[in-house]
Every structure is written in C-alpha cells, then in structure tokens.
Amino acid sequence: MNRIYIGDIPEIELDLIEDISSATVKKIKYKKPDGTIGEWAGTLVGTTKLKYQTITNDIDQSGNWQLQAYVEMSVWKGHGETTYFQVNELWE
Image 1 (cartoon, helix red, strand yellow):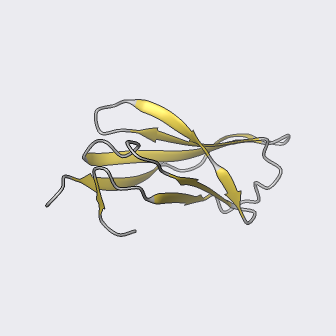
Image 2: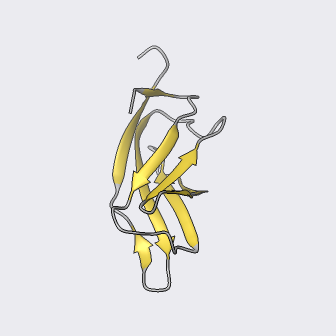
C-alpha cells in the first residue's frame, strides 16, 4: 500500500486465507489512533478476501490504525488477525 494521508480515500483489502464465501456477516473493524473503534461493511472478493472502499472523512486521523476482519459463518464466527497501517499528516 502506498503512503496514506489524512483525507485520502484508499481501498482496504484483508485476506483471511480461508474460504469465507459462505459468510453471512462480513465486516472490517478498525481502531483509530485515538482509540475510537468502529466497523465498515466488507465486500467479498474471491473466496478469501474482504474489501472496503473508504469514503470522504473515513480516514480522519494520523497515526497507527488497526484493522481486523470479522465474519460469521454456520461453522465459525470470529476475527481475523490484526493488521496495521500508518496514516500521515499532509506534507509528511
């Protein structure tokens, strides 16, 4: 992923490695640098990935963001591994 700046509108994609095509709930959860927690609706890509196209004002803080996929299937409900990305102030 290229450098991300406050106000950018990146596409976020998480690979869960396992087949999640039967998931009835697909979310990408986030934790902002200030500790605020939220979630975005994930869209299935292939059979193992979730993606979310951010929109204006989604990426509104600089610092280290945390992401986790969350899915619910008939055989399993839970989170993927935590991943991180850095958001920079403009002109950094």
